[in-house]
Length: 100
Length: 478
Image (cartoon, rainbow over all chains, first blue to last red; front, side, top):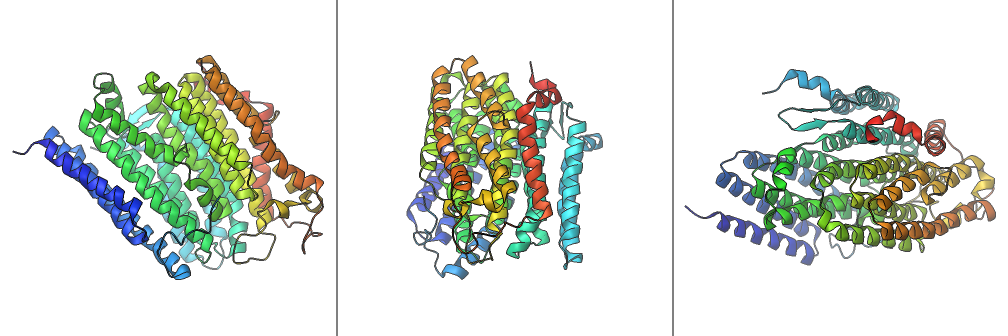
């Protein structure tokens, strides 16, 4: 059987890829996808902990994380669409009328 | 197993959840007039407020230890309910003028309120997460409600991306805490905390707190606040800056007080100082009243952080009082701004929010000017208004727990804040009105008027009789 650490390292790596993606990419959709990647990395760590601790609550947590991510996606895409209708661009560097 | 006796303990939660669903149906069947859904949601919030008030002394842990109902969480819930109640009162006129008075607004705001209450009552990380996300997702929608306006779109987009990003950190923190302790239940985690202080747990806790600091607006996670509050519909900004903060603070404080992280006091003090500095200094250069109030909300987060740093029963008392005062004064100020904003024809963007347009408001509409003056003076912490006592109790608690230097900095910075609040007051009272609408009185509808009067009454009542609050929540005095 594999050690817990392998799963944790995988989840930490995926999480970091997500974080770097959010910070580096400039397209709102890609940023949104990177956030989803972060959430799924967390799901891996929750399931791994749950399995190694022999305790179900982590797996139950994952169901709720998935549900919330779906709700967030619905709202997020709606916001992206309404922004695109006004601006015809999803480049977050161009979203800059609000400052200081 | 569900114990049906538990359900009677959460009647306020059930009322809010049910009325959020019912108000959607009412909105469908009364498309022409916004009145039925408006009255219904006001009554629902009032009913929940009364039920919570009647059972304020309950102290139970229910539903498989998922929720913890105690006087403390009840107090914070009541403050959040009060804030949403006043927001509802002022919403209808404002939204009608902008042509967005949809029934869904009331429903979404009730769902957000449900999230806040779940979060405050939560005794399990799962419940905290669900409550927080219910609240945040509703806030994203409410921010972007004016979907034809660029500013509203932009602020919703920024809020959504940053909010979801920080949720990731919060959740990762929860996952690490779960891994380190084996529990998601907060009571059990706190019980094991003294036993395990592993690096994994501490990293998890730090990430968890980052998530909450983002919601409260503690430096360096405050950058979203001005942009979001400027772009959101004004009544929604007022609600987010008061009720949202009450919910996040009410969830975080019991955890932090029980953990008693004395060795990190220095870190907390530095965060508090930087938050107050940022809020107060940047506010000096603002010329837009909505942004000014947003920066003042960051400064208030700093004062609350001073209370969190002192970590005593006395400081909880201070924070609760400050938040109550804050609901009246900050929300009141936002409502006055929303009323004045509505006095011009609806343009492409927000009108009447810069200082120049506030010139001579006292001549045009003395009542609005007096109300805004009281709210701003109260925010600046000038007696005899409620804001003064809020700051007084927080700083007193800080001095009691040997944080004298922090209190001195806080008091000095709140003296600086008087400058930018007085600037608005000078524009209103001592400058001549300008522009095409200069001579006209500002029309105020009856309901907005009532909302302003309630906030004004609260600011004055708790300013003149601060003991009222403590008599009602006797438990807070030890």
